[in-house]
Length: 279
Length: 256
Image (cartoon, each protein chain N blue to C red):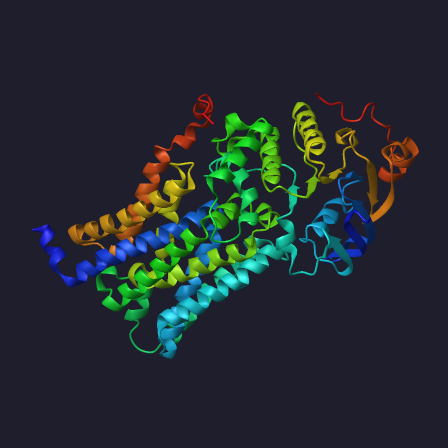
């Protein structure tokens, strides 16, 4: 019977990882989507992957490497994009390609079998350990707590960053905090979802929720629900169809996005306008 | 008694190779309504950013509301300065309503970790009523017209309860009817609250008649300043804009 799989520790860990990773990635994804930072997020995800590979190559904890690289890339990209010395697309593209180059370099220099490196690339939610779960739960708790604590400031920055600055909100600090949160989230989810696939789980559930609501709070809740649903449905598909779990999760999240776009009330903007809303 | 609320002394601002402000010195008195005009690139917007602490001085000093801007006190001073910029394109899908956007004006004053109270929301609703936007309070901000967006932006600045009001081309990129409505609103607000107001425009037709003083800027400098009567003359304006300019009849005819 299919449900009997749930009694195994590895599946319980996978379900927990899906819950925690799904919530954290999607919540961070809401900020990435609403602030149009998609390319920055992709870049940070690849930096985390390169950092983890450096850790594997040099023999230190890959998560520390991932965290350092993702935070460093956020610290470089943010100011470069802000100052406008280079076109943001150009500067982010350069950092992105550098990170990808470094990742392949570290992988090439690594001696012996590269199973662990490939696991970081594709992810392996079915092999996450209790230790991974604790790390993921801590990060999820920190991210959700920060969002609750700074909700109004984050909302102001999403609304208009320059206006947020002009009314006396530390908007630059909040903006960099969001970039760093993306880095931390990618790091925490790297082993379960994988460096190549993690970004889809950040982007797709949030982008799906973006199609469905004009309320930021509802968008956060919907995105978290879609993220968790993607993880759990992907896990089920992986078990039932014997396909790689990370790929199943990402494809599920893309299907949810496709459905949300197809049924989006925001595609009927004129129809919406004809019904004046009460004050 | 000295009632100067803004004092700028020999301010120089530079963006890479371009010098946006070249040794500007200026004083603005409490409650004054000052128009700042000049061609594009004259340094008008930069002058406003110097006042709210967002522009970085290469040289010179700025005092605002009794404090010298020193790079660390900008945030606290900005809580007391309302700022309205020109209309920008907003993503129509953005999940922020007009009411939420206007509440952003309160956030700086509330400070970190403090949520808006019912009284704050009541202020927002009252101000939305005042600017004629109460019926659109739940509308996503990306669905507003240019004129509606500017009304919401003015409402946001008002809920800040500012002591200084900076308006940077608030009527740019909106149609004439909306321009007149916005100008009427700005004058109504000044009559009601007597806030020190700086109004930047490159378009003389959108200069509110309530202006008490005009500052003419050119190439990053205060080129001339004086009463509107003495500044709004064809020979002065033609020199300022380096093109033949006729003074518009009855500048910014207003709806009452």
